[in-house]
Image (cartoon, rainbow, N blue to C red; front, side):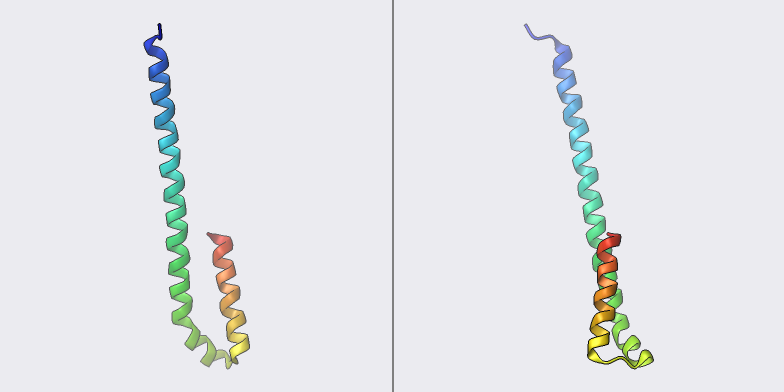
Length: 75
């Protein structure tokens, strides 16, 4: 015979795993949202940076890619 204590322990473990899965999914979603937000902000600032610092296409690409790599590390 199986006691009712093991059933409760299994359900508690399932709740714990479900909570962790929700937490991990939330963190991943927030990281993706922030990465997309950073990308949009950088996209809006490209023309201003190019004009203010008189950068050519190569330097503009380097600056944008450096900022996106920073976003990846931050996320």
